[in-house]
Image (cartoon, rainbow, N blue to C red; front, side, top):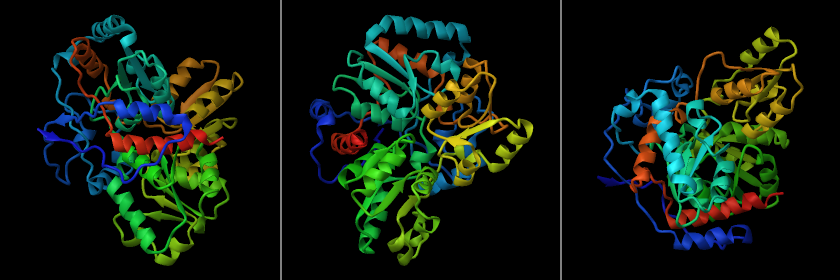
Length: 442
């Protein structure tokens, strides 16, 4: 058995602003727990990463990491996510109706002691059990509003569960049904690599920089921003966060998603030549000292494997097939895809936009397939389809399966907490500072 260091400690603290003062105070009383996990086997360069494979489940019909070259990059980053212990085969052999009824019965038995959160990208077999569904930050806020629940079962991925733990109260325990439900984009930016890049920029005299981390990042990166006068953003408020940051600095350092950063910078009128990409495997991130010194926006080399699959060709075909189509994509898509679309926005924005659209309209959507399929089912008065013709779900969200939910709830009902996600106290406090700044943005 080993102690898995999910998060690095932070340097220095800053007193939080009033919005999170209560959360800050609560964290002082929250016990620190260290997750004990078996040592994970070594991974060769020729085999899939262990957290992206699961011998107990059939593979998704498409694994986006394989199709957009994420596996080699993740290996270079040295991704070592926790290894989920195998659960009895009986959970997977169980007939769906029987399994679901057991889950519903356990939910009724646990009552208000349990709240289940379901991310929009989860499959319907999972989302049916959710008390709340939404994007990562919305769900964390909803969890914080359920102070009566002792257990928060987060059907999402690990960075989301981290945020829920940061925002939850001392007595609450955040549970991830499958510990291997990670996020390839979040894992493309490691705390140590970002700190090394920051130190390099300082040595080059690149100062007056404000760091911004996307919500889809590890707690350690949120804490880094809290330490260094930075902030967190979501895909819906990135533009306003850029405005906030430029009031406090001349340059921005944005991670981990290169594309959301570039799309936001483009909308803010930052010239392309003033945006550079930092590759942590290259000297000076693959740039010259002069380029870094003159840059306005430094973008980390990272991306979402699902959204990287969308292309201008797909949009062109959709317009040929449906001349009156409305194309809307997520801002994690590449710049040329966002520019070719009619509109772009966060998951919640896409849902609201398509839901409010007139009956009879046609929508081609560039985001995760489970959400698109759910919109198509819930809005039968519109024609809705995914831009990507290949059914390619978020493979890490796919790690969460009803079998793991049942296994987890049976343990919780018996008083045995499994798969608890905890963030160390120092990291949580610094992360709260950066989250507080985000919430203060008008």
